[in-house]
Image 1 (tube, rainbow, N blue to C red):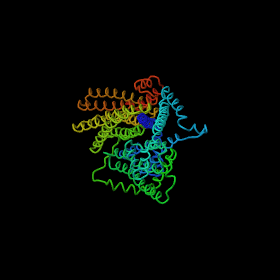
Image 2 (cartoon, one colour; image 1 turned 120 degrees about the vertical axis):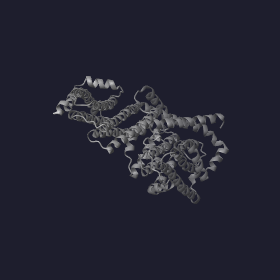
Image 3 (cartoon, one colour; image 1 turned 90 degrees about the horizontal axis):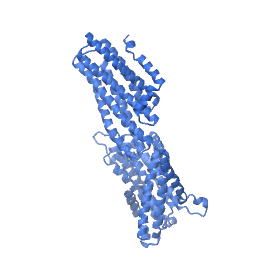
Image 4 (tube, rainbow, N blue to C red; image 1 turned 90 degrees about the vertical axis):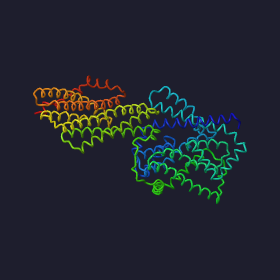
Length: 585
């Protein structure tokens, strides 16, 4: 092996790792909706958690990435430690899929149809289809499919390049002696651990081992301990990710490490005992690509079978290693670890935004209650909800901007943009809730009171605002454009109510039945209620835009007002329902 072979090896390894990364990211985007569905199915049931971890890892092609995701879930309070244990176990099985794909490179047969299964036979076709999809298709899903094909072709080309570069090592005595040394199980485990810790991917390190196996100098006796060590090395990513997380997230990372260390220790002892007593002949035979894939899968299955019944013991162990403290536990609503899996991160943003929306709407409704029946406790509740909404806007805004820098689909990008727009409107609704509350407190402080007719009018407009809040919240939570279309006609009615109430207020001032001080408060109340309706209109308009796959709010609302008989019918119905004349009788 000369200098040029070394350069070729480096190039092949680079292409291999790059192809694996590209394919994993494209698979992740392509399966975004499925990943979100899987997240929703997480339960304390062992089988469900195991299957979830297996499928997610098989999709994103990295147990390290899926375990980091689990740490993020636990840190955000989305997943309990008990659930995390089963998902991590499933992830260890899911990571074996890559080795099976790479083992196809070892196919060697005189049969043409069998040879078609060899990657070097079909990756050129995959590359052609992939580049056509990527360059000429506008649909995001087809583009991602093209990237999956291109990533897989690059990965296999890198694998083939590495195999060709190292083939000359078979005649070098030092290389032979290296793998003879690795037949010492402890050295083999150590080598697998260090290699995987450096590249932070057990799938990639197994691929490198398969490439070296082409030389014929890697025996099963050396390969099996290295595979065992790879499971420990892959824990480094999760352990680093848990730094700065809450105690349960640290426990989840420690579960991953404990699971692999215990599993490796037990089966390494069995392996050493078996080799000492029975001395199986196959351990001295050269390992094939297929054989390494089998060994990788069998080892991970055995670890899972060993530890699955002991998941409770594993939970107790990590609870003792990371004990509870007297300090209160702080959960991170939006964990940065989830940004590595954008579809999951966006789903978490939806959940937090939904909580923010409900909080803001409840704050406004509580402040309306304070208009009729003030209480210090309810006033404090409104202020707490407003502060909570402010906090949500801060963290969501920052997180969504970070998410937008990731490679996400067009649909997810539009959803992120919608959330960014809507959180501002919900935050302003909570601000108006506090403004209403302060107006009430000003009246109480100055011993002001509205006339009976003014009280009646306030009851009409607050009823209309309560309904528009419910409609906009429901349309936001369900992404329902039909519900959203009911908001704009009601917003127009509220605008008319505001103008009518201003005119009535001027008449009361002229008649001397209302004071100037009460009039100033009255004006503030009307402004806050009308602007609340405006924000509801913005929220509903975004839902309609999303359904139409555009983000032109004014165009959508203008079209709704001017070209819809249904809009006019709803406007007339709301105008009749919230008529000041009708409700003053």
